[in-house]
Image (cartoon, one colour):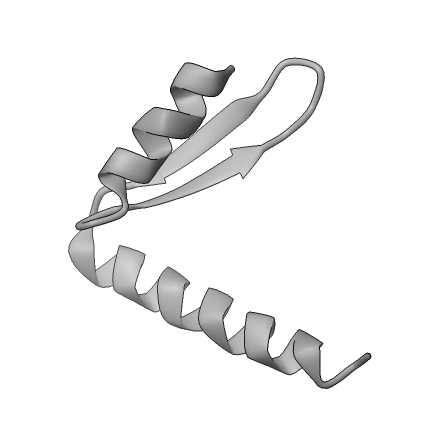
Length: 54
């Protein structure tokens, strides 16, 4: 499981990785740079929005 996490960190430069932490972890890797950028923008937006909900 930790190896999956390390691999996900390595990919973050040009790809995005979504990790689902369950008993048997799964990962979704977005390899298309435009899609990865769109997902990251959405994630960043939601992250900042959630800070205002506290």
